[in-house]
Every structure is written in structure tokens, then in C-alpha cells.
Length: 399
Image 1: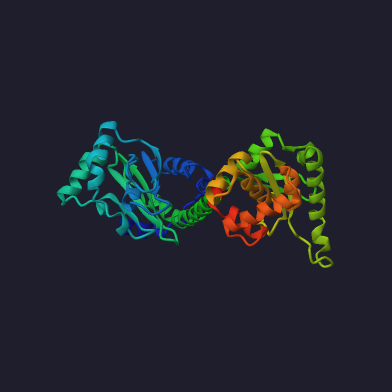
Image 2: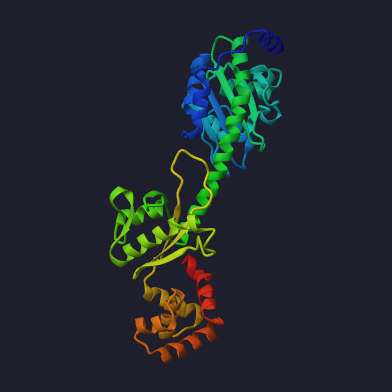
């Protein structure tokens, strides 16, 4: 093997045409690198080729195994991208039942970037190694093999495996695999970075969904550039918010006029930042009171450089999935409020003044003030701002 590698160093560097493009494009495939593995197997005329790894913590030995046999009980899924000949079903079942736990290959002892052939992975003098070869690899057509481990900077390893039933690999084959090592390592690092970003985004999206928030990004004229799933759902329903002509954010009546005015005012803010100390202040709009729906329009912050248009504004939309009656019952349960007190507390928590809430609920202003004092006493709030904070930081926020 070492002699072969020495010979390969004296040769011209192998051409990676047809392999690097699918390796890079494979970052966006699901599963990743399927096209690359197919192309590599065809280029090396292998009967089987695979890349295996586990993106996050778990059974790393399982992530390294060269045979594409599903296993259960792992803490995170192994990504196993394979091309070519599969193990016979009877062999696959034997692997699941027993051989999986007896795999003797020294996966984590492999030097990253070094190419190993089968005699370096399994010792013929060891009965356990020989049994593994005879029971799994030989029936699967893996008589001749090359394996290489690559390691990303964060410590995650991936194993590249190519096998043939007959006809050994040549020095040129070894050189090609070795030439791929730095590119595969970089691709693995990029994939891990993307996975971390996907996980962060998924957690944030789940929190936004749990809190019944949606977001939409807009350009300075109010054209919708992007939105999350919740925002898309609101637009598709079209009851309050819609996509208007040219993709502009629209709503009916007074709400629509309020949105248009807020967008125009905010979009003009950057040009007035030096003159106006209040520039960039968010605009809050009540879209609907029953069911409750409100919106916060803010200037977009710095955005990553992409080919897509940069948003000027972000619209955060909050919906209450519970009716006002349900919310009043929940407030009563949480703070021991009477129904009349709970109705006033809900109105105050939604930004109404005492006078506005009294008019909405058919109370006199004096009665509303009396109720509000009882509410503050029961909740421990020192005023309306405290009350709003107590309610919106309570478990009701995720109910």
C-alpha cells in the first residue's frame, strides 16, 4: 500500500473533473452528496461506494460502518449515503441481529486522510475478524476495499468507503481518493455549519410557532420578500392579511391604511436618522380584536449578503389562538380574578387605556378604575405596565 502511494506521488495529480461540482452541490441535497457518491463509484468502477457519518453526538461507531443497514436505538440518525450493490437481505438481517455489535474494524483509529485497504482493517489471523469478513463482507461483494476517514474541525468524522468484488484498486485509484480528502473535509465542515444553523433556525421557528408569532420581510414599498410557514398560512387564509398587486402586503379598510402609513413612515426613517432621535421606532398595529391579531413593524437589521433582495422592514405578526372568552377564563384561573376583572385585565393587557377598555366593556371609567385596583392587588402589579408584563410573561404566553 505505501509503495503504491509513493508511486502515485510521482504521477500527475489526478483530475477531479466531474467530482468537485457534485461534492459542493451535494451540500443542498437530501441526503447530502448522493450524486457525488454515484459519480465517485462510477469513476472508480466500484461495485459499492458510501459516505457515512453522524452529524451530532451519538454512537460514532455506528456512523462509521460501511454497510448500509438501518439500526435502531441510536440517539441521532446516521447519515449513510450509498451507491451500488447492496447486501443480500439475509446478510443484512444477520448484520442487524448480531454482526452490527461485533464489528471489529478500527474506525476511530484510522489516521484521517490516510487510505486503508481491507487487510489493514481486518486481520486474517484473528478469528473474529475473519468471521466478520466471511459472514458480511464477502457475501456483500466487498472483497477489495478502500476506506478513508476525514475529520472536520469540530471533530465530526466521516468515512468514505469504496469496494469491489474483483479487480484490485490501482495506484491511480488511490491517488484520486487521496486528492479528494481536503475537499471532502471542507465539505463536511460546511455541512456541519449548515446543520447547526438549521437546528438553530428550527428551534427559533418552533418557539415562534409556540408563541403564535409569524414573520414577513418587506422591501421599502411593502412588497413581501419572504415569510415563515406561519406567515404563509396567514396570507393564504387571506382573512386579514393578503398579497396585493405586485406582491405588496395588503389588508382591508382602516387596518390596511394603518399598515401602508406605517410602512411609508418606517421606510423613510433611515434618511431622517440624523435629524430625528425617534427614528427606527417600531410601529404596532392591532389587526383584529376577535380573534386577536396584532403586528409589529420594525426596520430590518443587517442582513447576510445573498443574491436575494435585502429586506427594509420586518413584520412580526402575533395571533392569539384562544378566544377572548377562553383568555378571560385562563386569567381568572391564574390570578383568581372575577369574570368582570378578567375581561378588563385582558383589555388592558392588549394595550387599551382605562377609558378605552371601559368603553369596550360597557363600563363607566370609575368602575373600570375600581376593577383595575382589584386586579393590581390580586396580581401584584403596580400599574398597567406591570400588569401587561405579568400576563405576557406568564404561562398564558405558551398556552
